[in-house]
Length: 112
Length: 111
Picture 1 (cartoon, helix red, strand yellow):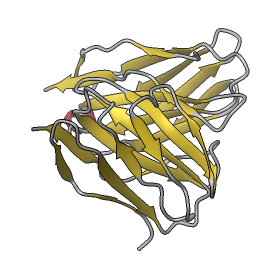
Picture 2: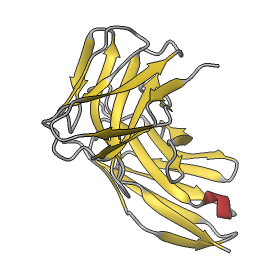
Picture 3: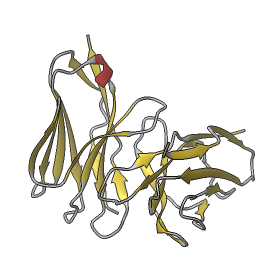
């Protein structure tokens, strides 16, 4: 079955620690996105990538980093510079940004 | 920064009535507009996409687009308890591959 897989489902970060959220898709989509969702809020764009080895900052990129070394994979690293990382993180992909986004099941990140 | 605005709600509608959800956007050049439904703790799922001015109907759902006024709306007819969810309006940026979401409207259908 084609789809987007995010892992882990739950993640805990200690003070000063970097953590990496995984996002893998087998839909052969070029465009991939990372969004952050706080309780009761909408989705805010962190980073997006249109093609391999290229990515752009979204509206809230500070404290985050990404890579796009393979078409299928778009991992997100939450660095220690992100002081309030507790949120629900969603990865999405699409064949065409003018068409629907396919979402992963999300990762809930909490701070210990 | 380009923005998408929605009333956060909650919007409470009796079962069987019409629910009306509204969204405004700041990017005048945008051409692609989306409504997603999100249940608590789950990922968003696409309800409707709309690209041209006017109405687009799909079952109980009708999306309406007015580019001159920069608003998009979603009507849900014969509302059911299963329609209770958060509805997210999304707009594709006219100059980039960014897709910007609004803050979402919480809809509650009361029996």
